[in-house]
Amino acid sequence: MFLLRDLSFKRDSVVTQGRISWVGRIFVSTAECNLGGQYVTILLASGVVHRDLKPENFLFTSRNEDADMKLIDFGLSDFIRPDERLNDCWKCFNVAPEVLHRSYIVWRLIFGVLVSSPIFCYVEADHSGQGQSLDFVKRLLNKDYRKRMTSAQALTHPWLRSESHPIPLDILVYKLVKSYLHATPFKRAALKALSKALTEDELVYLRAQFMLLEPSEDGRVSLENFRKALARNATDAMKMSRVPDILHAMAPLSYRKMDFEEFCAAAISTYQLEALENWEQIASTAFEHFEQEGNRVVSVEELARELNVGPTAHSMLRDWLRGNGKLSLLGIPNFCMG
Image (cartoon, rainbow, N blue to C red; front, side):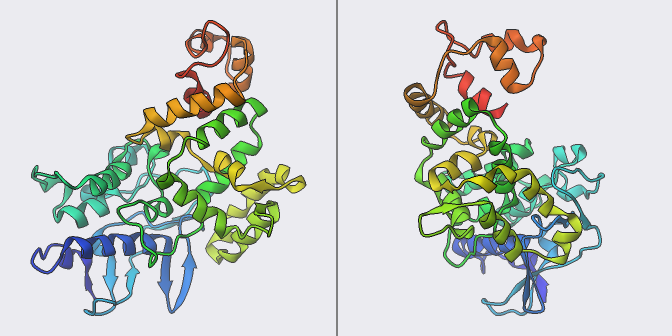
């Protein structure tokens, strides 16, 4: 075994395509740690956080180009339930500002592999012509963890996308669908309009997640599909972290099915969309759809009830409404983010 860092710092032996392959394998390893020939599927969805992700902890089993990559050093790892935060745990070269606010990420790992330099030692360089790779890193560098890509989403990014990288089931989908099922009809309509504005690149991830649920012949999924998909990826770690508890909150799906169009509305993150460079175009297109299909007159008081906020927020909510009482272009995305 030898360190991934040793490879990534050898400029004469590492080409761009090679780095792309390794970055992809890092994300696959982050989601699927190959142990003794069996896959412990989706560490994060299993409720396991590594807490020490860095190039030094990704090792190859041999010097062959097709060698298996393994994630090691689980000394700082821990179990975590959905939406729970851990105590501070970080090292100097791998810390991000929000780590002190208890959110853990993989951006530094990818930065080191792509740039071949620790983050604090980086020298500004010309990155013209590297649009997709820069977009990839920026979407991991976002300080707001709600706007940052998950490992599964990273594997569907245009810069990294490859048939050789299996896309794991993303627990974020379960959280978003859960919230959607408990949303009001008005908010669901707004999310539906937003989903219709997505580009093909954004749909790749959603389509992959939908297919992992193994929809029925009529192209729809039920709560049972979500349950079985989670069971197929279940591990002892997942059971110990009680991730399946999230299924209880998805009970409304017991009485109906969801097609791909509604799944897209349910599984999109407005926070993540807002971080995209083409966000203004997405919001504008969504506004056009919402005007035709779901926008209606709503009072400030009703909007406050929709968002479960008090009278102190009324002045802000008035800015979201037009003179005719309907949500404005500014109001729709803010309303979706709740």
